[in-house]
Length: 433
Image 1 (cartoon, rainbow, N blue to C red):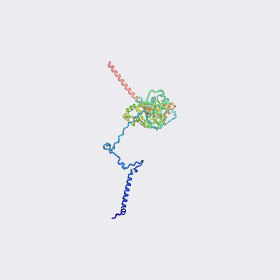
Image 2: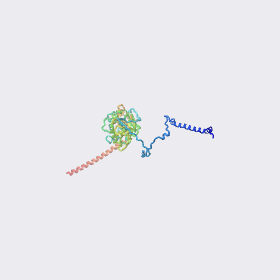
Image 3: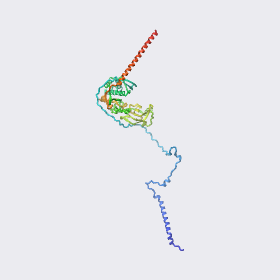
Image 4: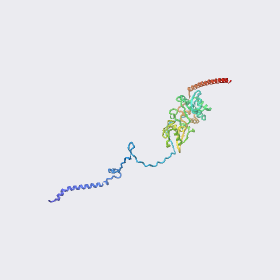
């Protein structure tokens, strides 16, 4: 059999060609795969992580002992932080306690003189008052009572117009409380001078009126530059007891007085009088929350406490409470700390409601009449002659009849004792004989 290469080639050619093509394609594909890492790497701005890279990342499984199993929910215990040296505590040397803004409306009133001269006798009116000086209830006639109050409050060293203003205010204050069936607290000092008698006589029976009624004519030694509203001090709002300017009060010797206490003294006083134990943070010891009439402190905190126990009773902490604890003149004060000492600067003396006595003194010196002074401090008021206080007169008549009855009882008792002594003398003489 003759081998025909030509025929063999024609038959084998397709198979060979196919095999060659497959080999070429395989070699080409293999070449491309080898170049993958070189051509397919992400550029520098891309942060893609391939799946194969994530799988081979080396993680260590925590043992059970490394878990905190004491919590309600299982939590991985955080790595302990490296301790760093604590910064040195900087000792506070000085600071001022901030005072918030105040929006009290302050009035300025300059009334014209009334030229009012009517008077009446008040000696038949009998009043009982609590005398702060003797700590007793004292009963006096109206004239003697007013004279003793004036003598105690301002004496006779000030101008006549100031003395007369004090006399009318004192009588109005007593009458207001008597109408309310209250015994007012006053300071009495007997032994008043002829000057005081003359001034009281000049305005005897006159009172301060608002809307037809005698007012509660309260007064204090001085203010912190303007008087205070009654509602801010006692919670009762009177339309005539609002804040008015009192510029002369800075002449009061008690204006701007400084009380200096060391931080140890402050700590001892507060902890002995309250149930508060002060912290080491001096800046937290005092905080002022609100003020009224410019300088008077209302709500405040002691070491961030708003209430404390004083004498077994829970009290809201106010400027008045702190002033009482520390023995300050009033609650119009500023607080500074300077090198171990707290400095409390007070302005004026007393509650500041109504007439300022030092203000009256210098208003009189400036030429104001007593009625101008009174109507400056008691807004929208008038000065009128009061009606006789019938209740006070009847009280005097009743006391007088009781005194006579007591005197008669004493006399009868005295006569009985004398007769008994005489009888004894007779018996004794007989016995001796």
